[in-house]
Image 1 (tube, rainbow, N blue to C red):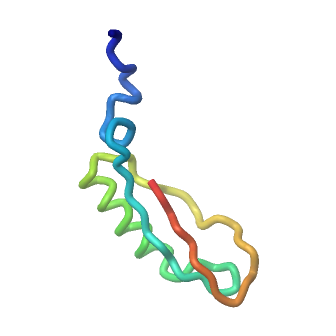
Image 2: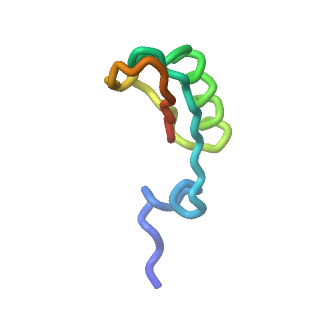
Image 3: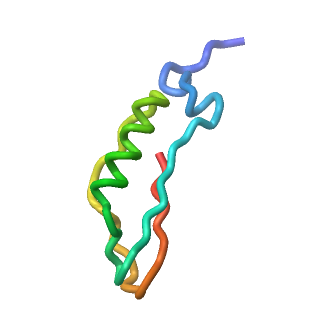
Length: 71
């Protein structure tokens, strides 16, 4: 049996460790984006996962919706 490659020898790959947050959206804009991203980053740090980064995705301009971010 060969050892796993280094990049997949992590909890996320071996045990399915993930973190997520769900945001409310209004007219295609995620509400409280920075607060949700900060909380998700803290959870990722605790789990040893890479921190999420970036801008909100472009969404359809619906009156209300939900967006799930998964790391």
